[in-house]
Length: 87
Image 1 (cartoon, rainbow, N blue to C red):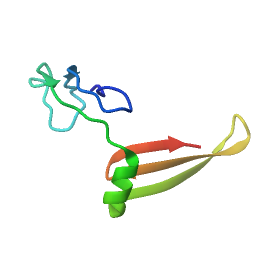
Image 2: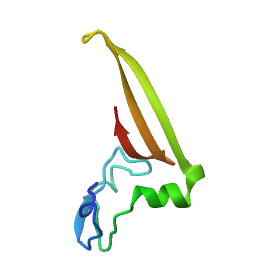
Image 3: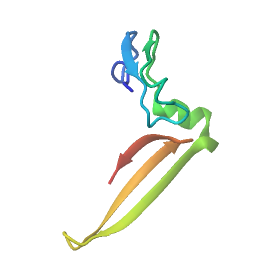
Image 4: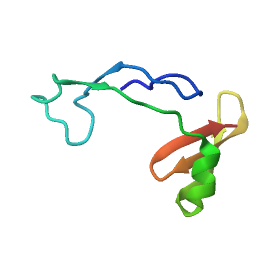
């Protein structure tokens, strides 16, 4: 699956191929292709403002034995869509 354009709003045609690993996609339908005719960037701040109950923030902390230290990752989700990930 491809993301259309950059962080700015842009109109474009990008080919998106189906993948057998996608839920509900069978091997017979995986060969079919779709085209995105209209796409627009979504600002994360819009989602946070309009759907604050759908935003989930989480922190994961693990011990890295090779580096002998604790590492952490912070994630921001909108429903099941990962919006941000960082340390």
